[in-house]
Image (cartoon, rainbow, N blue to C red; front, side, top):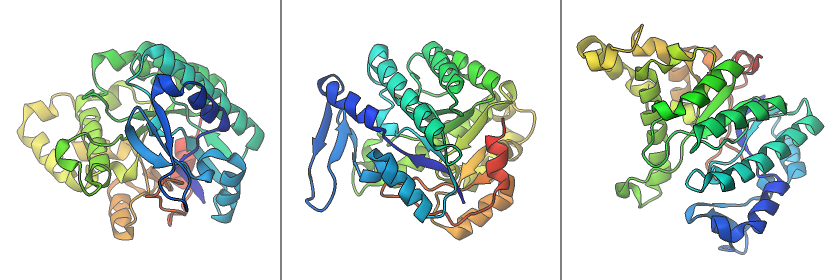
Length: 312
């Protein structure tokens, strides 16, 4: 089995956070004697620092126990640091990417990795991506949205141009929704996370960006959010409204088949629907391990989607 959606925080990154604790407002809190410490950065999206997050040896043991033969590992979204000055984010980007590159080299063929990049400065993000792929990483994980940004904004052109040039994997990973209506009952995570993906991907699809940058391999977290379920509504809008069809060369449901989707849905019927909609070669096993809401291991074991995603 393969895994395209899994995360780690290398020891070098933990060391950097401790050295820069005040600059990034990093806080470690022991909330439960039976659990590991919880970490928050800048007061956002606290999570449990399980040993599998921070100990590569433990991660590899768990990987083997689950029957995963190859993992495409990503940095965690809590450490994107897009709200900080560019110099701070870029410093962590360098530490994170170099650490992952060294791990990939040491553990090939069990591990591949994606970079983190300085998306608040798209020119720097393009350089980060180019440098990381020069180190052997396969692309980048980026936030689907932050501070109300849409990834189709003109300012992000340098990043998309470089990703297209490199034929990079770009893993769109949502952050917690900041909709104030979702503050209770974990709704910011439960429905806010797939909603953020839905908004981002709908905008990418309708903008024509997939035609402009056809060589970027865009991977969507959590089965693509809510978009696959509502694609019929987009197709109907395409028939009726110029605002929907103006930038497209085909109906939205055809563009849906040009993304890749992980399997983090916890719903075999939903997964079957997605496979029937976009094709088995566009659905790739993913777990979101070791976060609490992980599907570990994934029930999907097919290889065709993984091979096309990872092909250079």
